Length: 68
Image (cartoon, rainbow, N blue to C red):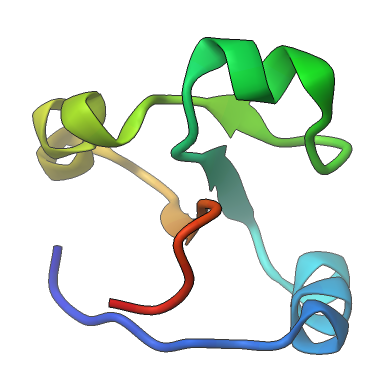
């Protein structure tokens, strides 16, 4: 992953209209099923490094732990 930037929910809302990004929910499948942001795909944190090198879109990641 080349760079990380923390954004607000408002920034995401604006960005999602103007860019072709993929929204990734890094939480467990159990938490994802309880609630997730509309349009998000669930890829648990432990698996994200496996798919990140093959991505064709920019990724926006979210979890329940806050910024690293």
